[in-house]
Image (cartoon, rainbow, N blue to C red):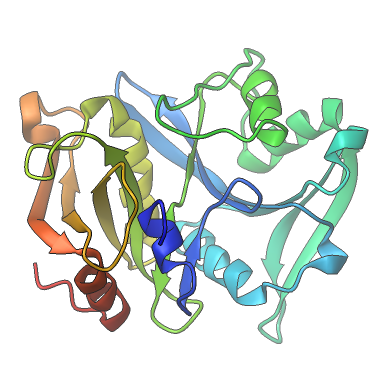
Length: 265
């Protein structure tokens, strides 16, 4: 049994998820009262590039970056405890493989380098942290203290691909104790949804929300599926998000639809 839907999917091929150890992150810049613009993506790996073997996963992340015309950065955390980050931009080689022109940077230089890659030059530091997100210390704590206040970062919770590298669904996983038919997306998370929808649309993927209660997940666990149709940061009331939803779909059926590419909503 699994505690969350992402863990329930973890053994499936063509499925990737962001974890504390290996984070797939989208980065944005806050604008207005609720909006955000996309800055880029990072693939945060616990080791050094020489030990990296998950090439399909990195190719998938590059498709998000390429489709949105923003950079994908490699962040190697293998020497973080010694005060260094391995940082570089992922680029395409003519033979279809990926290259990272990376360098080891002291932490006090890494923050400025990340801003350089993202095309910003802020001097007010301290990023915000979503209230319902887990943190793993290390890079997460460092980035909140040392990167610009206007930076917003978000996990790509679950990515379902059609062939191992081409994104099909980008899923935000939500958990609470609210009944399945009573939960709706919170407007406090609007910027996160803006970044999710922007990321997905640029890669020709479908943005989804998977909602589960905080309980162990098995084949018979009931969930709610949302397909996000539109986000409008300037709309009032509940009109800021338009979704199709299906309540009471069990986890096994939800998984089957995702893997077969047929949501039925």
